[in-house]
Image (cartoon, helix red, strand yellow):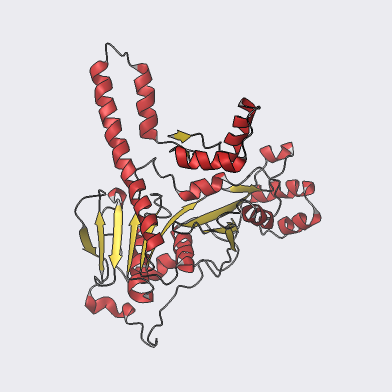
Length: 380
């Protein structure tokens, strides 16, 4: 049974006291009974829903239970199968979390970009009519421990593409043998050939892992721990500087530990796309759009394994160039254990539009002098 995501045990206890003011029950007693006598959880804070499920609900409301009984039955069966397929993603994630907690050489993570934050985030009415500076946050959540890292940066430092995702992933990865990644199917960020090539490069050139497995959800059913983390953050807090957003993140959670925040510099963001082009085939040899799972293993050099269903047969494709053209993998001049890394993705701060710059000049008068200074230094 699931209760609203807006509730928690503390709120339930307060509601219980309001309903039964004459009963003397401590919070600890209530919490113990709630956790041991009932199988109740609180839903995830969901900001979006599945379009397929929404369409089913809307169609169902428009049909007559008597005259359209056969159509209703067919739609209900189809929607049930859709939800069963979607549930497999969560079952796999739950199994990986359990395995990561009991196995020292295995880890599982969820990763996702969060909703953009607009700065300055202030209450004045002028904000609604002006363009603001966008602040990006990429979250990597460790399923075994609950550790969660936010990579944050304003729009003039980097973009929100595959180079950034690849950079944050390589910055975060540590020495475990096997890694399982859960993320949505955003083509420009997670589900693209740059990430596929990166996985192979991490396993076979950087040699930090023996295998990397990545699982994508059914569209509309991609609720991750990253979404739950975002639900803990009060985005209505007054914020004027990127540093204010960092403070909000660090104070948003106490258990199991506060969020870790990385201030992204242009040194962190690498040009992985151009770096990997000469080391692999130029085009992905299989249709990525339909892929549900990908895997790269250290004993299968040059190959990427994939499947289009969660329980189907694994297929494989060669993604490295032919041996006679494979000089880029020799990495001559490097010592044992060394490897190449790309250059920074950007030569300097990224420009913002003239219209946004002009609007920021108007908004700066509502902010302290320190904020005025940062906006005045923004390049045209």
